[in-house]
Length: 141
Image (cartoon, rainbow, N blue to C red; front, side):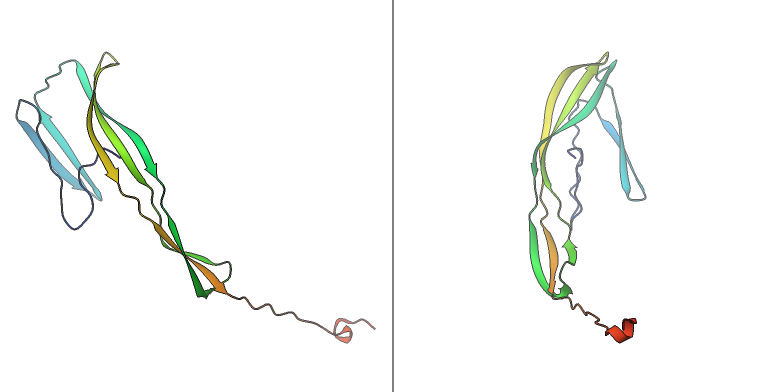
């Protein structure tokens, strides 16, 4: 989380922004269900590394709507829509030199929407049939 730039929806909103003083080359490829981008350009920080770090600021718990269903037996539950928590995540660019963080810059704060769930719970009574046998049937005289 906090490292993505596009979402799955009915439009594509993936955008790259070159915030350096030099041109960059972007190479993208799709393998299976993953998209990978490599970005090439002048290294303005010779001998240093840039890392991206993320921090979850808030977790938003989903609600689960319970629907009573008289077509399901008592005790039976069916998850109609799986609940997913939402998050607020902050991303940072970290400049590392000789293994030490020398600069931490905040980049973005992203919000991932909560997705509430729906569970159907059975209310249909279960029939219990008891079999009563006579003493003659079980061999007691």
